[in-house]
Image (cartoon, rainbow, N blue to C red; front, side, top):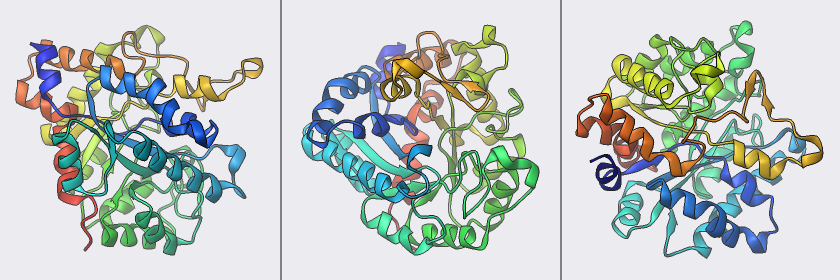
Length: 345
């Protein structure tokens, strides 16, 4: 029953940093490396809709951030152009539906913290023209637009350029992503937002008290906009004790978000980062720490996209209705993207 349902469902992953690994290769290998390394995993996991974040490592900041942003965006286009029978870079809901109908994986470009733009919010339309449809404006630290969750002690809201960025994104039909944003910034966004926002990879703070997770009030706030909270799979965001780094703990977070935000407002934002970091980090100097989270840790059986069917199986075993499971694994994200992606105000 579970494999059949997973095959029939639209499975959406709203955060996989694979562009970091692919773009590190020579450009002439981008399409083939994706086809050989990542496409089999996405296919094995039944992924139909994949959000590709553009995350810029510290080594490129600040001077090279914009160049690396453009390089990764170009990488996504080359991946799509070099694999036209299997993937499509999509700009709106209609293109996503066309890709799914053709049996192709729909790819959606996102910016994670947008460091290459700094306070130049007039560049958001440029990013939109290049295909970006989702964006966040902070990571763990401070940007010109807002403070990330690692700076929660400042209690700061969006800066004036940050407010302008939100308004620009809403006009363009780019979905605002609150993942990584500081608590006061999330509150500010929820005050100002006139269109749905989403969290592409955030778990429940009620179950794991980590600044990267969302409180119940924040979960309800995102849902009130019509948005979706996509649960992060990184074990350190799910539990403090490694003995609890299990699929069951992940399911606890999914059920908690569904219970608080509503079944129509929860999705999957796995953040499969271990393989990406292994590709990018020389063996001589491995350092997989990410703040207080060890990204070497994985959930047994779900260490990459191929493990996603276990989530469907686990939700069914917990007694969730099939319709609800299909909403969680991708239906809710698909609904949001159909309604909002690329729809200019």
